Image 1 (cartoon, rainbow, N blue to C red):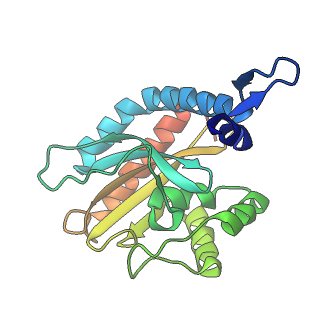
Image 2: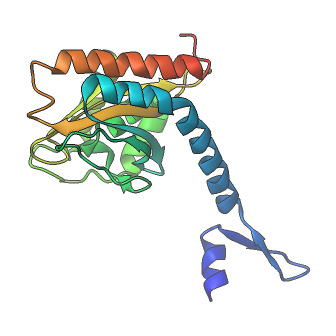
Length: 211
């Protein structure tokens, strides 16, 4: 029964002649994704430390996972107010600056398909859960080149994120900072935005992006 369930989900495939089960396409795809993420983390890691030092905030590296965002790496500071975000756990894209910036950089057709299938979570009173309004937010994010989560995940928490691009110019990951509003203040926001965007550009260059 367990193998049949795995087969229905694409994790294994039953061979017609032998009746034996072999790994399915989905498990192979997951393995490739883990390998890709590990390489990305290795390249991004020193830049993440640099961003953590310059801003004093927690730094996260995120990728889209199905119709959500998932953080695959994280650098914490020694500050007593440091926030810890679970890695390898999917989050709703509307409550994450990283999620916003990645969806905003999808091709329009792919973005519409993504919005049709994703769930916009009401994680705080400020979260955007209407898909038309969220699409407007994505248009703004793409135009300005970064995303901000202004207490949309939780009260008292702000996030800033920018896209990391590969050699083909595709936005394959996000890098961002997360901190308390008393740390990421209106006064400090412009400097932190500049640092985040610069680090995203540096990682993109290391991946071969020449845009």
